[in-house]
Structure formats: structure tokens, C-alpha cells
Length: 496
Ligand code: BES
Ligand code: ZN
Ligand code: ZN
Image (cartoon, rainbow, N blue to C red):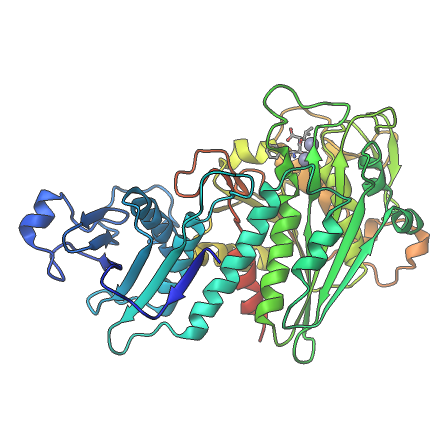
């Protein structure tokens, strides 16, 4: 493990002291002045002789922000602190919970997770540069706590996020529909809770009529697969949740091929699947009392060959609804159409999907924020609040009914892109998906549906937030692990 908590704190450990106002804890006024350190949030002062780094957390000293939800965020602060430590080549640190700053164990948890996450980088293919190990010791003032159990909680989340980030970074020649089943099985080999893993191969997908998944993947040399993982709670089931993730292991665009510069990084187009798998992984380690969790993702490669699917093709999806292909680069919503429809068969209380679905979401909410939308106000409100609590950036983009006609088909039930170009593509994509969580719209007689209804559903477009293309200086370039913490936290909040 590249990051760990230690008990044995020696002299060489650099002391991290969180400071609300500069005039505290022996920080000499003159020194503070010389270092121009006022304790402002996200500011730092390094005192090499004393082997101390002061970390400012005072919010009001900060320039005014325009985001009404912005606040002191200990995960962000932890990540920013690592970016300082890295400069000074410091790898052993102790965090002192000083009495003048009241840190809760949740604050310390987020701070250390931020440190661990910022320290991590994907170096599987680096042959020369060696990884450094990060050790954190916690010295607590009397009365304050950060127990072994809390440390282990942080490490579980850390491992889950690293799992997702490693999968997202893994090259498409090594992570694809042919290799994914081994990767999944390996990671769930040892868990605390009962896990059931089903992997459907091409033949089974054909039998089940998962035609949208099959169509998107038909030009790849690796036929698509679908993974369904079930986690049972310790006690009686009170709630059932389906987590669905887009799993395009490479998105070349297909025949509507991506142009110069837009194809690179498209190994990350399975980030939604990796995010949900990581949530399932964390939950399998933590264990829930009363919530049954399912993770469902189809894995396919959107490639080009003589048998590529084409704009003008019409697909009969698993739900029975027909979709005319307008653009082969809008492939994610096709695989999601089948996986979302399948998830409704489990009659869940909630469906949440995560997908690197549209460039439009990045344009609309910036590459930092997740665009959240769905069909259930209460679920959106709760999940949104959890994102804020965890300090993960999110915007609620409401789904305007007036746009629904844009995805309605002329010679089919639906089209896979909007008829109007350049109109809020993340929203028309969301409206398209909404047809596949609403069984009242289904028309596949072999599903034998009774009591058809629209299932509670939230869609997270993580096209920007899942991958840092260098604009976010806190985390290393690449996969971010975004949304995992919030979804885990939300699951814990409904486990009562
Ligand atoms: N995987 C892409 C979306 C994407 C773009 C993710 C950039 C991350 C960064 C998706 O499959 C796609 O190509 N969407 C198209 C849809 C369009 C053809 C309607 C897009 O957003 O341009
Ligand atoms: Zn695409
Ligand atoms: Zn895609």
C-alpha cells in the first residue's frame, strides 16, 4: 500500500497544524508576517527548522466566492496540502488536532483521504520513476478522536477510489470487454459481505435481447459483456438500489469518428462503470444493514469495421422501444438504454446512473462539476445535499419537458440524438435515458411486466468531473474518482 496510517511518530515526521487565524499555536507574529501567512483557507506556511507546516483554514479571509455552496472542504484542503508536501519532498507527517481548531473525526477523515488521493498517481507503466510511500500519524489532543476504525474507513474509501482511478487510467488494450470479467472477479474475491457476480457473454446478451449493447459493440474484436453484481445487506432488506454505469472501454466515435484531439483519453469512457464498481467495492467492504445494492454495467468498445453500426440503423432495444441511430458517437445512451431497462426489472427503490455521456455537460457546467438530473425531486434533493456535504462539485440541470420532442423519432420511437443541433445535449441525452426507466413506455412482451411505473432515477453526467485533463491542479492529471465518496455516503444515509 502506498499510503498508510502509523502509530510510531518519530522526530522526522513533519507536523501539520491547521490554523484558523495566524496568531495561534506558537506561530510567532513576526514569522507569520515574514511568511505573509494569515491563516486564510488554502494558504500554507512551511517552517523547515521546526519541521512544521501551517495550513490555513480561515474561510472569511478568502476572496469572495460566487458559488453559494462553497465552503471549507477538508478533502480539498488535504489534496492541496499534499501538493505542498510534494514540493518539499515530505512523506512522513503527523496531524495534530489542536484544541484551538475543533476538527471532527469526519474532518480528519476527509483531510487524510484528500492527502492520500492527491499523493496517488498512476505509475503502472513507469519503469524508472519509483513511487514514494506516504505515512500519516495522528497525534490527538485529549478528548479528540480519530480511532483505528475511522482510519480503516478512510482506507476503504481510498482503496475504492484507487480501484476506479486505476481502471479508468488502464489502457484500452488491457481493459476491454474481453478482460473486464477477470478484473471484476479479482477485485471482489475477498469481501466481507455476500457478493453474487453474473457476467453475461455475447450469446446470453443475444438470448436476452440486449440489442442496443450488442449493436454498439459489434465492430469490436472483443464482443460486449454485461456485469451484474449483487450485494446483500446484513439484515432484512428495506431498500433496493441499482447503480448503473456507462462502460464504453473505448469510444472512437464509430463511423461518426471522433476528429483530431477528441479521441485521445477516450479510454476513460468507462468511468461511470468504474465509479459504480468502486461504490459497490466500498459497500462490500463496509457492509450495510438494510440496503440491497446492485451494480449493473455493460462493457462495449465503440469501434470501426465493415460491420460497424451505422447512422440510419434502427435498433429494437431490450425495453422494446425502437431507436433510430442518428449518430454513432452517441453510443453511451444506447448501452445505458438496455442496462437501465434491465435494472427496472429488479424493482428497485432507486436507480442511479453515472456516465461520461456528453461533451455538452462539460460545456454547460465546466469540466469540474457533475451535471445531475432525473425524474424524482426528493432523490435529487437528497443526493445533491450529499454531494455538497462531501464537497463534490455538482449542478442540478433540470430536464425540460419541451425538449423531449427532440429525441422522439420520425420513423422509430426515439432517435439517439436531438433533432436540433447544439441544444443542451446533456439534457436531451437525459430525456432520452428517462424513457428506459419508465416501464409504461416499454413494449417488449417477453418481459411480462405487470404494474408498470416510472422508477425513481438520477443520472449523473460525469463527462468532465471524472477526468482531469490538466485543468485541476489539486489532483494528478487523469482519473479523479469523483462521485464515489458522495454515492457511498448517500447509501450510508439511507441505511437505517
Ligand atoms: N464519450 C462521449 C462524451 C464525452 C466527451 C466524454 C468528452 C468525455 C469527454 C460521448 O459518447 C459522445 O461522444 N457524445 C457526443 C454526443 C453527440 C454525438 C450527440 C458528444 O457529446 O459530442
Ligand atoms: Zn461517443
Ligand atoms: Zn462515449
